[in-house]
Length: 273
View (cartoon, rainbow, N blue to C red):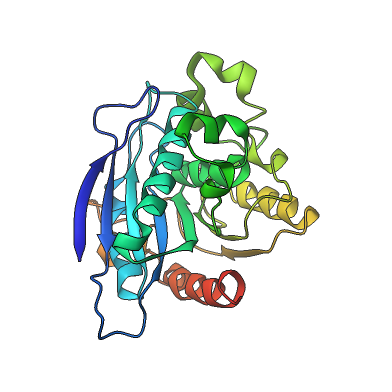
């Protein structure tokens, strides 16, 4: 495995913003010479970056044959669009190193949990915006993601909002930009396919966030797969003992199936061509 840390710098970045690679070692003895890669954005309400939703998820993807990188993005007091620029910078870095790292440059996805899900989904909505390519110094097409995997994502700034995430993301610009960052209103024909899962018992980020996004994707004929589990709280990560919280919470057996469901979605929807 190639495990390496890279500083990530954009306008307004915190000193500890970084990308960590979890790349499967290349071997001429293997038939697979280039592998898909998933860029993981952990949650944390734009206050911090959750360790539970980073490395262990990356290692799970490695076990299934995928490369992964984890982005520790800048959080409050950094405000929008710093984290988004950092994610675009990571996409740029991965594509620049795609030959060296044996990455299939056409199969790079963004993944995020909770507020990290908002970041990943924001990227899915905004990757083609001219300001992003201009700031990062590449063409918009070089920033195109193949898909989005969203775990109990923060989406709406409306009735079902996790308001604290939006206040942390926008700071003093909250009133001026909260509607723009309500992502159910930002879906377009350029939005990539999405795999989304949530729980009906989530009391931090209501499941309506995922339902609103799913409806918006359907209206625009964007492929979407939604799994709404009956049980389980917020922030489940892998939903088993591997990512259990220090107090013993954070597991739900039923929800562990998201990994196999997501892999099936990748193979049958995103990579079928």
